Image (cartoon, rainbow, N blue to C red):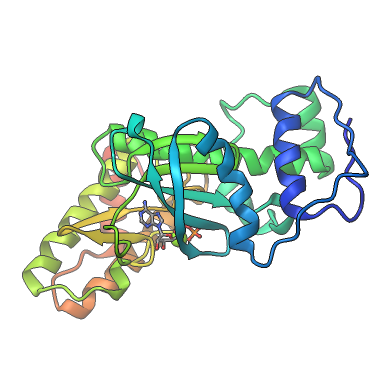
Length: 288
Ligand SMILES: Nc1ncnc2c1ncn2[C@@H]1O[C@H](COP(=O)(O)OP(=O)(O)O)[C@@H](O)[C@H]1O
Ligand SMILES: [Mg+2]
């Protein structure tokens, strides 16, 4: 198996590990003479992950980073004509070495169901080896990809997924050539508008639950507002209420966070526990 030298730069390591998990039969050796290029910023370093998207004719140009978050950097790209849209947003996850999965435990519960890791991976997961961490990293991104697909297909207000290549989720871009859509937190709505946006967001929470998902990090920071429409983003931590014991509490927290933004408009907001109970009884467990 390929073993990384101690001083491997993170960005280079991540891409090789991806190749390794895709083709575990191939033994890769590091070419010690090859010099890795040095990058100034994380935004530049992560660009290497967008090369395959250009080669595969998904995008033709990376225009600029939109936002550099703790988990990923999102880039504004020009879409290839085959995608039948002008722009695309590419969310590039930071290398797994830079993440701690400890705090993700609450979201991971129940995740392995259905994903069928092989015996070697299961052993590795238990031992917290690099292979185990890589499996978790890969599963974390795949979970966002699948959730976006599922909820967009169900008619939810989430970006359409365009593709997934390694650590990159390529999706519909919200915004125009000059500016990306703002997050709802920075937007001031008219009172009537706020009322209808709030109702629509509650409708989305209900639709998500019906499709076995609780967002679990919902707030005015993970909602974009564009063309009078609120679009919910950022799903890797979403949980399945059938398998995750904390899902109900996370649902209540999502509603509380939503209320925190809308309360400033003096509209009638729902009682978080009461509302969560009512939709939970409809979609998850009538006896709760
Ligand atoms: N589809 C999109 N269109 C436009 N901007 C986006 C899109 N997706 C994400 N962004 C921008 O990137 C930021 C980070 O994306 P997000 O999915 O929330 O990742 P993180 O885990 O880093 O919070 C968002 O707050 C938003 O500003
Ligand atoms: Mg976010």
